[in-house]
Image (tube, rainbow, N blue to C red; front, side):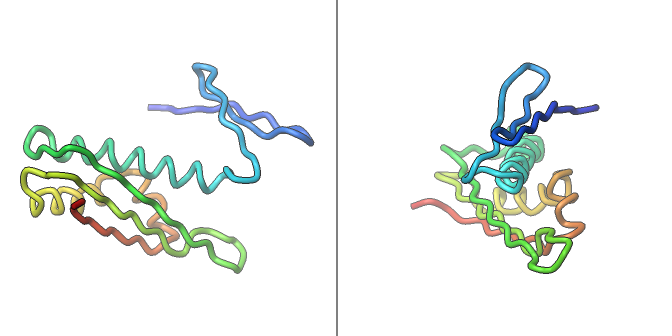
Length: 126
């Protein structure tokens, strides 16, 4: 399935939009790596829901993604950590195992893993 965006750059504005016209801007606080890490969280969670199917229930799931870039060129990510916090899972061990399996199926996780050491932390909210 092909995906596409349309980007527009001037001296004062940097943005891209999807086929449906939604604008996404780059500014001093949101840049390419924030979009990349956000894309990782979205892809990873979508894949998790496919892995879990109807087997495990929970109230909510938060994903905190951190990336550390290399200082040498090319400055790709050298370490990426996903911290997944789940509230009231019906089976925490099964949820943790599903999270581990998700890493193998998530296409963006696997793409970033080509250049970065990947770390997964799964914890239960109090």
